[in-house]
Image (cartoon, rainbow, N blue to C red):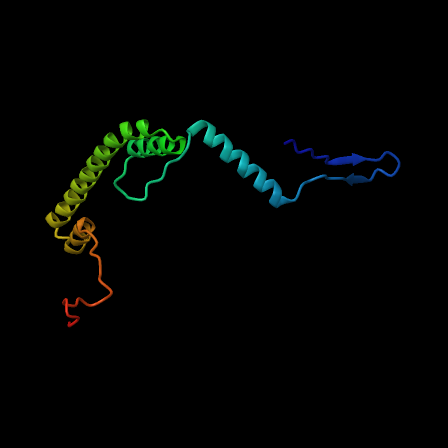
Length: 142
């Protein structure tokens, strides 16, 4: 999309300067520029993959994306071929992340930073499911 801007017209008789502009609204210009910048970045850098968990690496995200594409195409054989390495990669990434968090916690302990150490160790703890109903015996008693 081309944006044409006419800035100055000078009339000979009165020596007045007349400024004429054909500018799009600033908001639309900003939107156009941001879309063009996003498209150029997408072409150069490729698709950005975001992980929901902190331990998932970019390589694992790429394999997850391949599995998703195989499912969308309906190619079950390709999905089954990719699913095993994907699970192994996820387990490896999580193990690496847990070891790194544990090392961080140990370093905090070495320097006497107890709160920071336990904050690191708390990340390793799995979330416990809370039951919303009390447990009852078979005859209905608490």
